[in-house]
Image (cartoon, rainbow, N blue to C red; front, side, top):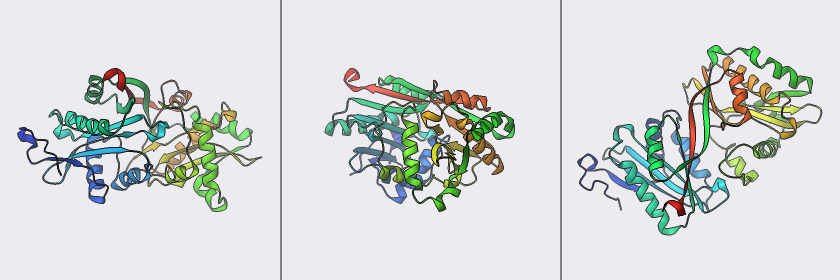
Length: 338
């Protein structure tokens, strides 16, 4: 049964608060809302469907949407187990409201509803959320409810019209002198039937010390194949692998998510190098190769983000990236605030 959110608010009359339905119409409506509310992070119905389908079946979530009579979604909230944390008592909150419907109490309505539903059936001790520094209203909303900043990741952008390939030449030369060859993943796959397993092992090694709110609980090969490799945004021709020629060992990776049609901007996924190969120019060689390819493909901008104390941020700045905003991860100690 639909829930009536109007409660005397004439501007909401006819709108309904209801559960999200995991089907094509709702995925399309959610993608439209997302792209209006968060235009910095564009998505598609296909990507939204993938996110839902790749969530582990034993991970509990509650979702609510606010729907107008014309079928458009004007608000969305979800709260549930942050399965990537490895702890069932850690929950994650994600919310958004259409820009034309803000400052009407919709965020509070959605927040209170999913919180009440979650608290009725689960005991959670911590809730995380994420927003951007360029969204002060969202930061205020979370802080007002007891959330505190737990991690800051500057977002930086490279204008490819200003790219100077000479910035990366030293790294390319240093890596090559040590027998490191950079390969495009698309070219490796035909002759490497175990490429997914190799990628998985390397990813696990490079992620051990990537800054995060949660210790890395590890990912099974099956989960890794489902996501990120199974994501509609994953494209082998936009990934580059650093290989030690003498041993065939995969030692580093960089790459971009597949952009939306007509997009001019590429979003970096992850750049990482096995610990034993760091400070050898490998990351610079990988990033330089990827940037040169992006220029050749006609893209105009690359965007990435790094935790503010991560050495990779300094490398990006050295290559010409410039900070634009920052991702802000927030955390709420439930026992202390409720």
